[in-house]
Length: 436
Image (cartoon, rainbow, N blue to C red):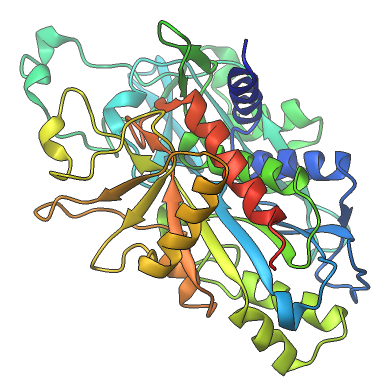
């Protein structure tokens, strides 16, 4: 197994342990701690030192890790890689139990983000997330992460005999067609609030101590390297845990230079980022300013630092699809394992411009990493990401990049082994460059 495949296996292990944004954040935190990063709290007064390694979390679902540079913030600024921890899925609603025909127990859910709904049918599913538990202080409930870690539900398809046009394309109603089946009814399941009982049993508390929960579905099928040469990564949540993982190791493996290096993993990108832990919030802006203040800088020093900073907004990109060639642009056609993709849009749904694209392309070429470019077909509306959203909060030059994948927002996406290592190398180099 080559170094690229070994690194891809590390990604698979990371994703397989990150079944919710809360678990992804916890796993990033554990790796940072192992690499000597110190946790600081938003409520505390910060005392930072040059070359110090620190991290801070928000809502237990977003995390920022940073290394203070050797130089001065006003002169050397911040080097930032941004990603996000959430992925499209289903969230379990309050009081979710639904009985059907007196024999089946299913759950009421709502769609989170923009999943490809059809890919969720007939797969063993489980649930993970966060539970809020009662304490003596009602203003500060305890948070407990939960992951059932086994298949406990499924969304069964309707047989073709009852849905003859299923292969012609049908409209899926998320309130009717995608509710997961949990069990058949027996004495154990006739009680109310079965989900609360299940949660309490799993985390070892009393049912009456549960105040609320945020639980999400996930497929329990493990990720794998596939292809004749094991050159593909097949797993869910590549969007965007692959970039979080590459950025994380790019940060911890980088050389300390003059700039202050930042990795920010936002939450809620898939639903618009307009939360306190999302890219549309002042979270990153506030933390950068607090870093500057803790290093003895005034407001002017902070703004001078921003003018010398750069942001790589890293999300996934679209590879050309071998079965749908006509869906790509005529001349910009990224392929899996062809290298990271610079994403460009005249509508400014991506932040890349000729200057910021040149910066990232120059970094890649300096370490022999291939680069591709993506532009939407002119008659197709594309997506967006944290780059332009972050730009509404932070006046920093930015480029939007990502690795090319197939099946974006499917319950199981397909990416490239070499692309993941290329992205990691580009982030490590970005963090390590010492300006002359």
